[in-house]
Amino acid sequence: MKPRTRVNHPPQTPLPAGNRALVAPIYQSVKFELDDLQQTERVWSGRADGYHYSREANPTVADLELLLAELQGRDACVAVGTGLAAVAVTLIALVSQGDHVLGFVETYPPTRRLLARTLARFGVGHTLLSIEDRAGIERALAARPVQLVWFESPTNPVLKVADIGHLTASARRHGALTVLDNTLAGLEAHAAFQVDLFVHSLTKYASGHGDVMGGAVIGSSELVQKVRTQALALGQTLDPHAAFLVQRGLRTYHLRRAAQCDSAARIAAFLAADRRVVRVRYPGLAQDPGHALARTQMPDFGSIISVDLAGAAEQSRIFADSLELFAIAASLGSTESLIVPPQLQQPRGLTLEQGGWSCITPTTARLSIGIEDPDDLQADLSAALDAAFR
Ligand SMILES: Cc1ncc(COP(=O)(O)O)c(C=O)c1O
Image (cartoon, rainbow, N blue to C red; front, side, top):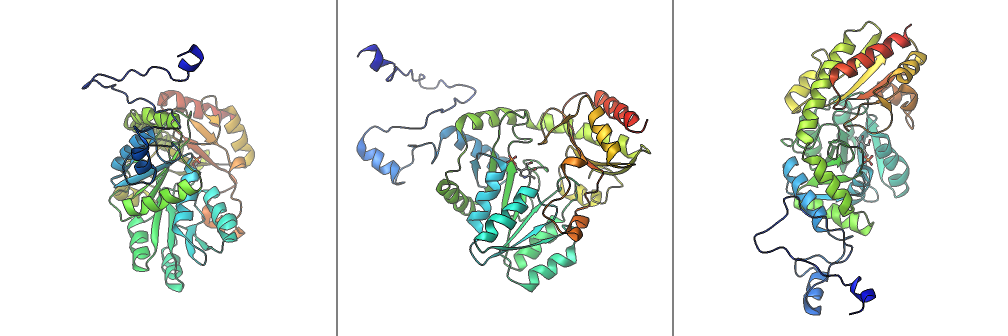
């Protein structure tokens, strides 16, 4: 074989029997071959297990899917390229023309946009209520056939806690499926509830280092297969290298999350005690409206805090600009602390009344607490408060 041929057919060293890498290899290969045409035909047609094309399935991605399903306490998972892709393929898999979705003003805005702009074009209707409107939820489910209830808990950015038992029971009574975007709550949260599918942005706590994007949909094998079929039809897959990075992040998930939650509890209490702060929403605070529910539902209280400063938006602007350790940046759940100031998160695509239900005010900022030393974070917040109210 000439060198030019050899470099394209390089030697591969199989590991001796009983010998394996402690960290699984990344199957960074688009194609997989089989021993002969007969076996290839069987695998390509789905009559035999095996891999042939990474858009359809890849062992590195499959490893991640197994782990995520186990963490969430369900049978199956499909991983895709971003959290929003997970949202989109789930919606497309579960609803058809003429169907109706019950969503909430507190729902992640791009998810609301998918309902309002994309699915509406295909004849799927939706209603938006406040996640706190128990009577309204009952009325909406009784008033017309609803196929899907889509919700989050805690919500982003005001950290309202949904009554998951009530929502899932009402939905079941009326024959609707439920999807819970569990991104803020964490990978194991809410498993005891009769939620049909969980969605996660892996970009956040799962990978944890802000260097990779991914999304996952987790539930029964039957429903996940439905979602996987749509994901494949739309070409939505997770790259194996991204899957590897998420798996690496997951090794420290519990340690990171515990440290983040501890720091967040301390910082929320510190902010709530400051006279220059008019509202702190954090489910771990005893005085938080969602605290009692969160205690019964959540394994921890998370690391996201919503904070409204006294004064006007100008104070919030100076506060955000004065922070040294909190970057003004999107996303959440990573190792570093972040702030989204009010100027970057005013509700859009909602009526005035719906905007009121969201409880996002002109001074609502969102903090995502990282794994830095909480002493430093608290000192940074304190100095920024001094600067804002000098
Ligand atoms: C609750 C929630 N769901 C979904 C997403 C989308 O995830 P991604 O940014 O990975 O597409 C986000 C991102 O912020 C989110 O906060």
